[in-house]
Length: 244
Length: 355
Image (cartoon, rainbow over the protein chains, first blue to last red):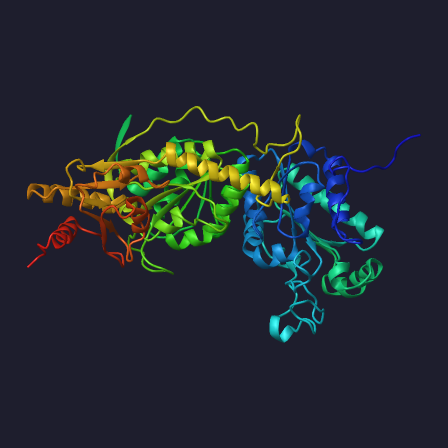
């Protein structure tokens, strides 16, 4: 019998220990599938953030570094400039990328570094237990805004893909959601586009993935997918903002 | 060997090039901006990379990436910027990655002053970042020594896979002197057993300052503590100047030590039996140099520092262990200590202060 689907070689065979229903596993699998498809595993340098996805250092099967909180784009810059033939991608959550690491992501994008950025946006701090993130929706409850995010106090959720697409250097900026099989396939195609851009030396690509956090949103895994469709996507529109 | 007339900051930058540094990221701050300026054109000449970071934090993080790539990497700053670099220096130490950080120190807390100061002693020797790690910190007293110590710093960093700080000050960084430049280093240490160059033909490598296994983290801390002990035995460096018959010994490092030497020569002419102990490594602190003093003769140690309050004096107290009297003399604010002021301070000790 012919094997038509298997676990990508760029993931460890051991599986992951993310919370039940968490889409980090899906996002990392898509990354791994594309790395396999483009045969990049043996020259990959994955730059991990601080947050739940730091744990992916145990799940991915290629060279990795963990950076200080928010600094992945700067670490990737230093590495890629020294080893331009290696494949370098960053993987960051929304606290890491849009709050403490805002300067690093914007300037890395603005320099047009020839790297690929993956941004997992689930609108909350997962690892530390559900605090408000820059991407938490207005009205959404978090442990540091018990009655829900109030725009009059803390402003509105930050649309990172749109912000980065105002810069001139990035060659590909897009947002996808991981809430349905059809959207997952589109996201994989976007990740492939971003990775190919780097391999072809075109420059900086930014792929935002709308993900979930059933644990800290306080909903079931199934409800969290409905939440993405009904609440997240209307505020964070899907699509390609730049495709040069 | 090439002899040149160079400004301290540029001499430090050129020494780094000759030591094999091929990556630099930095952010402008007075009084060290000539280092990034010089390296912005000099590194490309030798096939290296210069990046002007958007901040001190980004710059040290870029060095983090370059170090993982196996390239000799450096950043530089001055006192306020070192607070921002603390995160990255701690990360490098935790991740066991080599790098050289130059601090051309200035005076005061907060923004303080852009003028020189030796206020960074505790940052360099006690807490370059969070987490209780240590680094070798080298304190040049001349531009030549700044060149030699910067050159050597890369070897220490690679040997230990640990960051190294070159603790200069605004005087050393800004003055011009004749220097003999070292040869270009051609042989680099072998990093093939840890560098992250892609997993072709080997198991994957994960470099992380986050250590999931507490027993492993404790083991790393035990190993680091042993390394710090080795530094004390093998790497502590100091200069003892005219101490054999000395009754008064000045303890000073960096630019203060240079002013102290001039003062000592002046006082010796008057028959004052005075010498100098000058730490070259402020970390590891050269305790042995203080043990070697003859405390039957040395009646006073004057710790001279270009900062108020004195900071190195705490290590000097520890080294002297109550074997003789210790006092301090310093200038703050950004005033540069002159030999005359040190002469006066010594006369005050002997009860012969300026009338």
